[in-house]
Image (cartoon, rainbow, N blue to C red; front, top):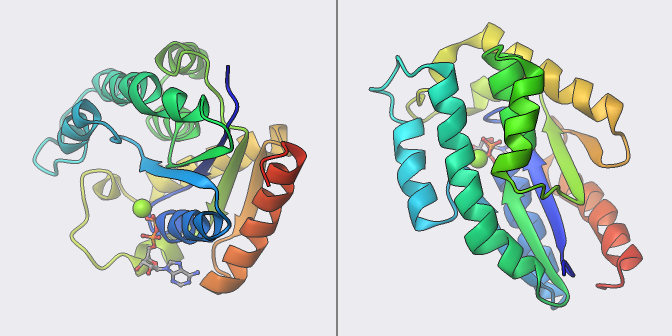
Length: 211
Ligand SMILES: Nc1ncnc2c1ncn2[C@@H]1O[C@H](COP(=O)(O)OP(=O)(O)O)[C@@H](O)[C@H]1O
Ligand SMILES: [Mg+2]
C-alpha cells in the first residue's frame, strides 16, 4: 500500500526545478521527514545509463518514438525499483525532478507524437503511478535559456519554438488539473519561491498526516 507522498517538479530546462527540488528536500529533511530526492530520466543504475543515451549531444537523429520508449523504459525501472519501495514506507516523501508530465509535454507537445498514444504508454510505463502533487516552475523560454551557461545538451538544441510548445503543453495540463498541478513563477527570487512551494507541500503533508 502507498503510504508516502509523491511530489514532482516539472518545466523546461533552466526554469529552476532542480534548485527548488533540492531546497524542498532539505527543508523536509530538517523537519524529520524521510525524503528521497531523485530525477528522471535516471534514479536507478539502468535509468542513469538510459539517461546518457537520451542526453548525448552526438545522437541528434533519434526517432521521437525511440526517444519516448527510452524515457518510459527508464521510468518503469525507476517506479518499480525505487519510487514504489520508498512510497511503501511510513511518512516518506519522494521528490522527483521530472516524471510523466515531462513525457506528455515533450513527446506529445514538443515532438508532436499523438497525445492519446503517449498518454496510454505513459500509464503503462509508470504502472499507473501518479504524483500527489506536481509543481510547475514556470518561466519564459528566453529567460530560462539565458540562465543556462553550460554546453547545451541534445534537448536544448531542439530550439526555442520546440520549448515554447513544451511550456504551453505544461500550462494546458495545469489548467485542466489545477488541484494536482500547481504553477509557480520561476522568475521569482529563489528563496521567496521556495517559501511558497514549501507552504503548499506542508499543507499537503498535513492533510496526509505525515507532518
Ligand atoms: N529563482 C531563480 N532566480 C534566478 N536564477 C535561478 C533561480 N533558480 C535557479 N536559478 C539559476 O538558474 C539556473 C538553472 O536552475 P536549475 O535549478 O538548474 O533549473 P532546471 O533544473 O529547471 O534546469 C541555475 O544556474 C540556477 O542557479
Ligand atoms: Mg535540472
